[in-house]
Length: 139
Image (cartoon, rainbow, N blue to C red):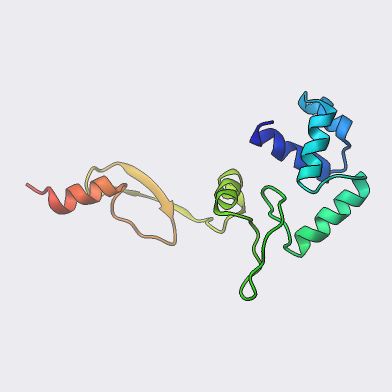
């Protein structure tokens, strides 16, 4: 099972679909889907599973990417992800969820190409290479 299929299984399971329906949709066997769901804590009756998963997500007890249990620290914000790998994967697949809404464009001070950046920064160069060339390779 690929990572994409695993994400689709989780999504379909939270929508209330059973093992057989998920397996037919993704072209997998029912046993593969069932074993995956049991390993990720999504096993059992659909209604109970959906309610349990939503309750655990609300309490920040599971990773929003893979569904594993997250270890919470004693202080600070509740963790949403079980690992750095999950955090990066989730943000890569959900860029619209971020706070970076204002994207601006500017011309590079060295090469003159147009590049885009988030409003929170104010860069002069399009890349680190252009910065190095402008700063140290002047004629």
